[in-house]
Image (tube, rainbow, N blue to C red; front, side, top):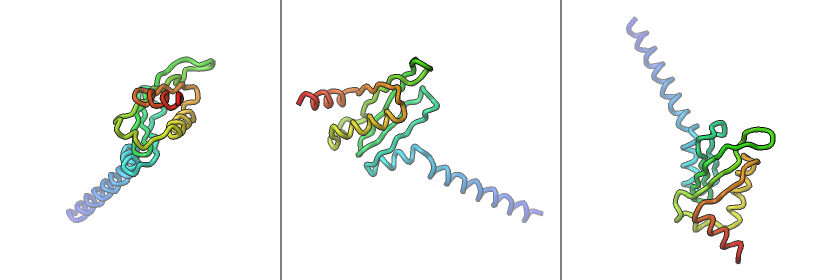
Length: 131
């Protein structure tokens, strides 16, 4: 009887460990960190939660966007995205076209939203438009 109980406990422990490993590898935050380390694109967002900010990594730069709810003609929707960079020193690899790519990706997810860039991206894009 004790041997059967011991085997059952070991089986349950193995199932729990397998579950924890699978959850670890499927975690979106881990995928975001991996993409950031490898300088790849990844969009991390909980679109069902309006209050939760989204994170985007692209070419080694990490951006955080705030979502603002408002009214459109037919419904309540995200009408403004305020996007800023977490660390301004990461921007040196990006060009104007990269920001257009990011805007296009945000527009796909939030078509009714107006995108507002925070400093220093706002000044960079304004400077590039004038030259």
